[in-house]
Structures are given as C-alpha cells and as structure tokens.
Image 1 (cartoon, rainbow, N blue to C red):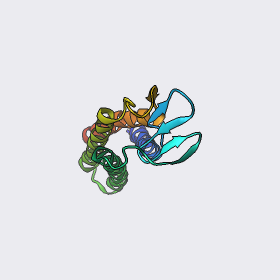
Image 2 (image 1 turned 45 degrees about the vertical axis):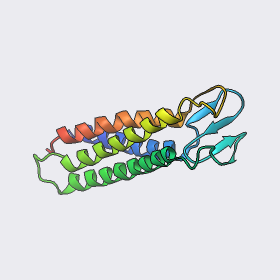
Image 3 (image 1 turned 90 degrees about the vertical axis):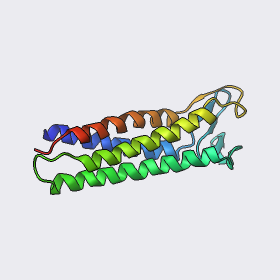
Image 4 (image 1 turned 90 degrees about the horizontal axis):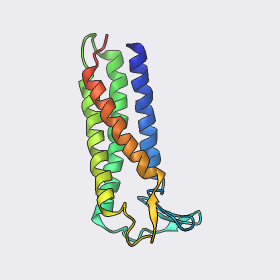
Length: 159
C-alpha cells in the first residue's frame, strides 16, 4: 500500500510539473517550415518569442488560458490536500477530497484543451503547414494522468 501511495504521489508531482511546462511553454502549434511556434501566450519565430499572438484578443484563447491556470491551481491544491489527509486522516477512510479536487483539475484540463483543439489546433490561418507541439501533447498526457489519479484517490483507503 505504501508503494502504491508513493507511486501515485510521484505521478501527481509529475503531472503538476507537466501542467506547468505545457502552460508556460509556447509550443502548442509548430510550423513545418522554419523555426516558428505558437503557444498560449506568445508567437515565437527563430527563437525570438516577442511576437504577439494574431488572435490574442479572442475570448476562446482567454478561456483556454484561464482553464489551464485553474487546472494547475487545482492540481497543486489536490496534492497539498493529499499530503494533509495522509498525515491527519484516520485509518480506513478514503481520500475523497483529494480525488474530487483532482477530478476538478481533470475537468479544467478537458475544457481548456478542447477549446484550444476546436479553435486553434489545426493551425489554419497561422501557418500553411503545421503540427502539434510538445506542450499540446503534454496537456493531453496530463489529462489522462489527472483522471487516473483522481479515480485512484477516490478508490484508495488509508491503511
């Protein structure tokens, strides 16, 4: 049981780190021609990330930014609640609060990345030919991890 809890804790920390990286890095869509990429915050060309996004004032992008920040906040809160519950909760109880908070993080990731996928992931109008960057892929990996962690928190009992 201790090994399982430690494993979940490590995966949870990895998920928080990947959420930070995917939200901060400007590599959500990458051009197939040259060194250019677009993220949630900036447009990067030739390793220079000073360019503003062509759609920076759109509500959809602001919603994606907000949901990704909320997912980071809920993931960190869930980690803190898990550590708190680990040391204060009586034996035999479940980690309901940690699991519920992590599932709210999962929901925020799902909404944010779904809006981005619908509006911007194809790269239409941005680059003639493009593909998904590592930030976009990391976000979908965090989506899967946060769901698995949330469900495991709900199922596990403290022994």
